[in-house]
Image (cartoon, rainbow, N blue to C red; front, side, top):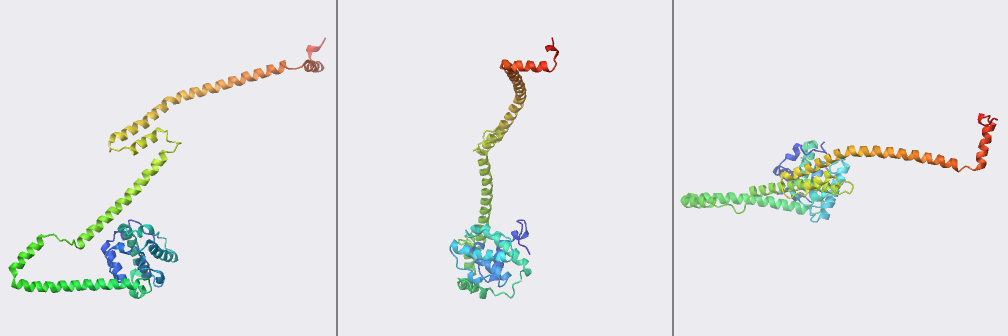
Amino acid sequence: MATNIGMMDGAYFVGRSEILAWINSTLHLNLSKVEDACSGAVHCQLMDAAHPGMVPMHKVNFDAKSEYEMIQNYKVLQDVFNKLKITKHIEVNKLIKGRPLDNLEFMQWMKRYCDSVNGGATNSYNPLERREACKGGKEATKKAVQSQSSSKGTTAASKAQSNHNSRRNDTNAAVNNVNQSGKSSRPSSSGGPAYDEQITELKLSVDSLEKERDFYFAKLRDIEILCQSPEIEHLAVVGAIQKILYATDDDASVAAEAEAMVSQEAKEVDILSPILEVSEERTSSETQKRKCIVNHDFDTAGVTTLSPRQRVSDASDVHCSGSPLMTY
């Protein structure tokens, strides 16, 4: 059973049309866009189809319009994930915004997971009956039925219209040919499903580019904050980084100047290193000399400050010890 699926998994290469067909056939809905399922109610029922009876459908709101109501649906979904020990992270704040790319990626994961449960078989599942327990579930079912019936009526009307046109073509072939050529030369004002699909693909591309832009901008902002730290802002390499960050033109000379700043500091360090070693040696020798002078002065001062009685006692100590200097 797949719970954690990598971004390079084949599940994330499933097209939008296939995802919509899977949702509509499984739940007997008539969604036209993947982001129409951003309220979270569809996700809850898909999990109910994969694990019948696991989802408390009476807590699911198919009529959720506000972000607060949508979040309640995702709380129900998260509780189901916890019961099934599914570790998939739900990015609720992104999904409730209705962004096409985020909703498509999460729905692709849902399809991959549901397919891994019993091979995706939901033959005994009755989505209409289960949806009646939800808030707004009956209205969602009615909308789906009405849209399906209207699409069937449109198809029947188009067939009747084509039969009527064929009869007219039998009587007025020349006139109809001229009219048809004129109509074919004019672009379609309504656009059609092809244009809708192109618009959706462009939206997905824009969302992907925005996410990539925000990612790299955050990285550059972190580098800028680090360069402003008082401990390192005086370094030449930091100045070189800031020079590249704040460059307004895409000029190769900026990078060359930054490299020159770093190399110049390296040369200065190499020149100053012998001088620093000599100065350290001189400082240590002078410190030793000061210590010797201080010790000598301290001994001399100690001798001169002795009292006459101390000197006599010292002499008597020498006499008692049998020193040849004190013999007569």
